[in-house]
Image 1: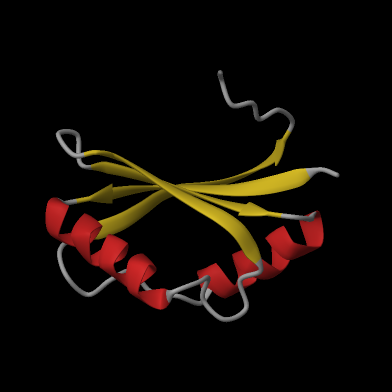
Image 2: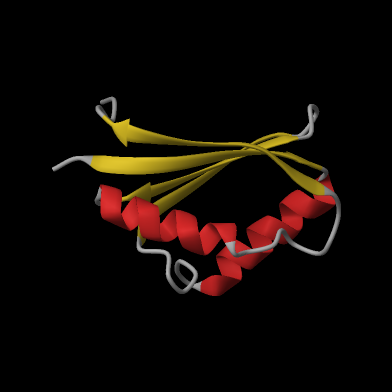
Amino acid sequence: MAEYARVVTFDADDVALEALLNEINSAGGPPPGVPATRITVLADRSAGKVLVAVRFGSEEDLRKGAEAFEAMSPPDAGSMRRVSVDSYEVVLERQTP
């Protein structure tokens, strides 16, 4: 069964990144209305870039999650600006031995 990912790129300073991580870690699960199966946060601190990839089990779940995320605001702390939003079908995932 195919999975889907919503990948969002932000310009963010360290304060905003830490606030985002604290918000995600303290939630104990996805926000209401976001039927996500996994979240990955990647950061290039020196460049001030953050990439958030959220996985969904279906295209319908991706659509529902995207609607919920669009209604959210970034953390109040620091400086964070959304640069891009893309959606992908996950066509391969393999863990190396």
